[in-house]
Length: 315
Image (cartoon, rainbow, N blue to C red; front, side, top):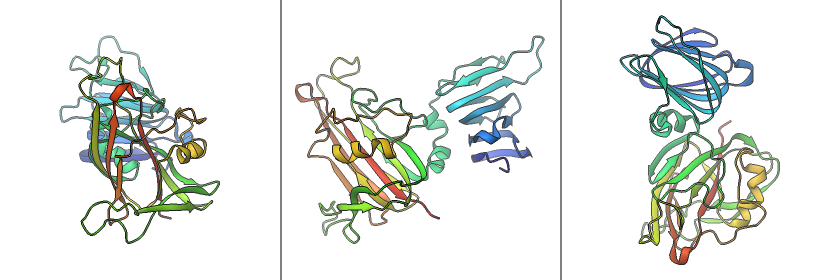
């Protein structure tokens, strides 16, 4: 929008623009990324209005006018608009919070997962074309990706660390080898990636892929499950320039490429996170990674899997 707000709307939807910093959503799903200069951006709907206070958020309106708002980062103010004898005060929502309008007009916390409700918009916004298998895009940045901080027995998590980021230094990575996406049998080739460098000044999108299962002592830990294997495909809109999967490459770039609001392992405190069984293969389109990751829980080992992916940005 002219105000600088980046709005994504997923069909089916009905909406119209009111001015350079307001729109009316009758039905549909949308996300908004609001820069500092556009604070005050407003979305109106039949039964709820949302005013941005500097944030990224999602807004959903169903065919009956029922609405809910989810805050991915920052804060919003939301208020039901139906006339009542006692007008209700606006509700302030912060990062990770959500609100849903009940039939009676009360605003309550939504139980809907942000990742599923706003998945199409969030993927497009992150320049991810498709996720498949056990991979899941996070709508909210994790507070930490240190061991035991972000766990799941069912999902490998993905989040975008940087968008259209100009590299301030050369980055050592494992770079794709053209023409060696697959071997003759169709299986992943061990020589798909080789040591390479992405030059300073290159504009990239940076993504973090993370898997850490529940650990001994966690209520959801299964004592009978000692080997967890997850698979999935991650397709980006643009070409993959390189991946960073070793402890050394990840820790060397946590401060440079990582998101400033996320806690990483850092300082070499943890070694040998991955197992030899892990497989990362590149499809011929040079935009898709196929993952087959394995975690072992034998003897209470606390290993985890992580990978950073650097993707080209179209000028």
